[in-house]
Image (cartoon, rainbow, N blue to C red; front, top):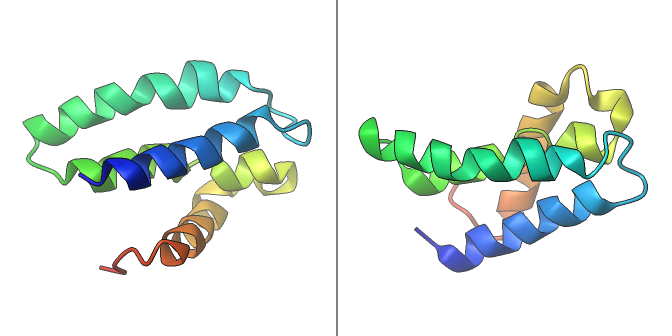
Length: 95
């Protein structure tokens, strides 16, 4: 697992959660996203999934709705596009 990438994405998401523009509040980071990371990583091991991909999914899946409340209802669709955009910026493989 690329610890530097996870750290960078984690910081990006936490920063978005702490932003005054985030109408959901910082609590989404503190009580929803951050606590899910170790749970998801444990499940990845149990189910022989790619731990890095699972961790990135946990970090990025709500980001579109956090950054723009109007996208909250369809955050899963907008979030996939936003995740692709962010990961492309880190030259993350598309597959």
